[in-house]
Amino acid sequence: MSSESKYIRIYVMGKDYLVPPDLTIMKAMEFIGYKYIRGIGCRGGFCGACATVYRMKDDYRLYTGLACQATVKDRMYLVQIPFVPAQKQHYDLTRLKSDSSIVMGLYPELARCVSCNSCTKACPQELEVMDAVQSILRGDLTKTANLSFDCIACGLCSLRCPAEIQHANVFQLVRRLHGAYELKRSKLLEARIGEMQEKKFEKQLQEYMKKTVEELRKAYSERKIEPEEVV
Amino acid sequence: MKYLYYPGCSLKSSAAELEKSALAVAGLLGIELTEISKWYCCGVLHGLAVDSEVYMVASARNLSKTQALARELNAPQELITICPMCDNTLKLVNMSLKSDQDKRDKVNKFMDTEEPYKGEVKVVHILELLKELSKKQPMEKYVKRSLNGLKVAPYYGCMLLRPREISFVDPNNPEIFEMMINSAGGTCISYPKRDECCGSYQTAVSKELALRNSSGILSSAKEWDADLMVTTCPLCHFNLKLCKEELQRRERRRLIPVLYITELLCYAFGLDEALTDDSKALINELLKSEVYAN
Image 1 (spheres, rainbow over the protein chains, first blue to last red):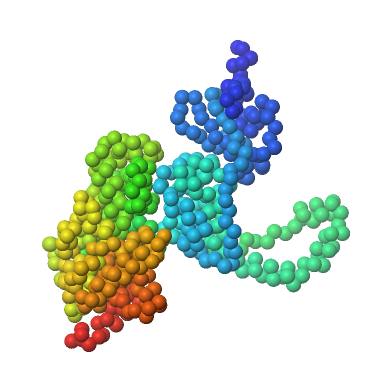
Image 2: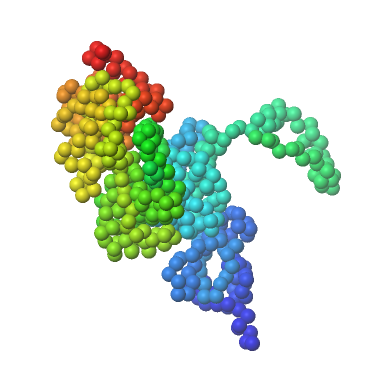
């Protein structure tokens, strides 16, 4: 067995390399010798910073993924997307209402959706992105908020969208409207905020500030966890 | 009778009263409408002004879903619409996909994840269905509260009439609103502008143009003695209502009110639960005038 057979061949920005199989794209890039200064974040699939596009040999499809999650495959042609530009509208949430006309007004390009489904195919989180856009068009912001809840704002859908929709920013606005105007208020949270404003915990906090790291560790491991609020 | 039904975006937002009233009338006449699961915006007619298959994908996706769902539920390969804009768009795309196999293949390949559309679904507007049913069972039979000769102007707009190839009525003499108004005990007013354009999407870019068109239509109906106008298109309804409110504000002109035809039918058929309080109050108020009092 030649030493080469333990490796697979990948192409990074057109240049070929031999890398061990089963590595994530990110680890493979680092194996080759690349050092990430942009397009990297949590390394755990949560932050959306490491968007990647790639093709496979003899396959017309353009695939997408997160470099920290997707593993390298033989004959993979890949490139990292360091940043996805998107325009973010400025708004004062307290002056808005939970209505799709508000969202359409701030991001009118939503009306250009042709239902091509490119966004859904591109999503590394496997969200129903097109359905989330379409729900805005028909005025169901609650559905959009729920469908887009796991969006990590990697921007891959926006890169593929022929209508040039800036999904992550649109969905963020929808979730904010939903959170501010639709969701039930947590009574316990409001009560606790009230207590904090009245400086109920000030004395306790000052005591903790004087403790050593060891004492803090002990206090943390012995803390009581309050039961969750039943809604 | 069980049919698959496509609502479209307007019916789920600005034209909720149209959906509610249309479903109530259909239900009374024995039509069971099942909303197709996971439908998408039809693509809207103006998209088709550009000769590009990509604007057909939205409608094609809905037609493909219907094809699969109809088979699964053992329902007819038909898709019922209520919004005339969706109806027109779906019909135009359907006509194109049915007649041009190359185009159909191209769109099917582009959709990629959906089951390929075979071009066999028939798009049917709800009024088309009601018209067929009324041939067997006249609508008069369902009237519980006569309109006492209320003078109603039917407004067709463009989407139900043009282009001729997809219209289910004679574009020059459509008669369908007339049949419904007469059945409900109203008096149908003939006036010259019943099929002129309300201004359509120009309302978004040139409001004054839309107001000019709509005020021409509303004034024409009033000149010919109508007390109420009925339509079935959410966009016409929007423009006409906007026009009435704007001219009232600017010039203190009093134009006639506008309702959906199915709201008028709900009133006549006693389907009060499907009417908004405002719509019901409006018809009650009109019928109170001396002209209609028995």
